[in-house]
Amino acid sequence: MDRFIASLPAESDGDLMLCRDFGIAYQHDRTNLCAYDDAYYDKCKSYEGQQIAQAINAGRVALVNKYVGLGKVVDVGIGSGEFIRLRPNTWGHDVNPAGIEWLKRNDLWAKNLQGFAGATFWDVLEHVETPEDYLQQIGLHAFAFVSIPLFYALGAVRASKHYRPGEHLQYFTEQGFIDWMERHGFRLMEMQDFEIRAGRESIYSFAFRRYRWPV
Image (cartoon, rainbow, N blue to C red; front, top):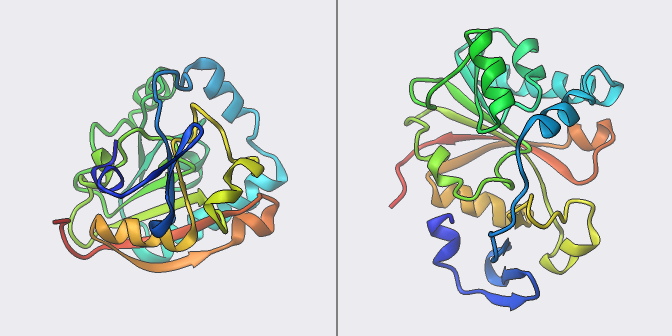
């Protein structure tokens, strides 16, 4: 579990722990988690080429290129690899064996996140048991690009389609997410809503830059 989240005072609310003063909720019991396997890879692949996917990926590529140009980027949690195919000079890292196999077969596998101008986390950080395992690998002055669902209040989590026990492990308000990234040493550069305009519910996109190492 993320050490900064674990350090926050929290109250129990069913299967969730609510850090009300910090805009963060998290799933406490993590014994029965989503399997990232061939079926999950195929589900991601089924979205390819759809109008909404085209608009989302165009926005993601534009956001990344605005800050790093054509610099070398690593995509963490590649889905089906569509973003990597659309943006040159992009490698990938994943935990799904199907994704890893695709990356290695195409000579796009990145063992870690070091040495890249930026790392992308499209619909990823809410899924990861210990997000800092990835964030701590991003170098000083490098960028982190994130898309993530946000909630206007922690009490609204269960009413959202993004409430997914066993799959989504962290939930954030807007300020809660920005402050949490700040704790990890990342300064907010920009927040966009192009994924919402493309048709997704409450998914915002961010560009952050590491300006310090976390305490």
